[in-house]
Length: 196
Image (tube, rainbow, N blue to C red):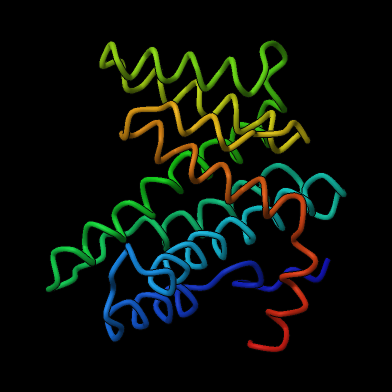
């Protein structure tokens, strides 16, 4: 096995993104700022997708895959302190989106994809649960949707247009990054190799 510590993602890599956020003027309405935040989120989702792919291919066993996911989660979801309140809120939004990505990946490794229901049905159930303020249930449904996406089901991101802004909308945003990463991790690999 060729897995070196930090092969999938490192604290240094996350800190580089955070440093870029600190240095740049961030306006989420502006395309460059929005892209920076999305790239930061996608970069984490790609690392998760690589772990899932290696797990699926038998390069990682269940325990190793869960360990790798835990390592990344601890780096990415650690509290980040910004003097700038708006940047703090934006990074919090990215972290919130990624919470569901980690849960879905772990659930997939431990239990495989959810067996019943479509991605859309799970998201609808999540939105209903959020309206009832049943946040744990809402996350659970989004995680189930995530396991279906990892298994190859399609998330139609336009479904998010009908959601009220809230946790479910943020979690779906994270799942959209995960879907992109699962479908296309190779292309980013090549670009990464050049920039690492």
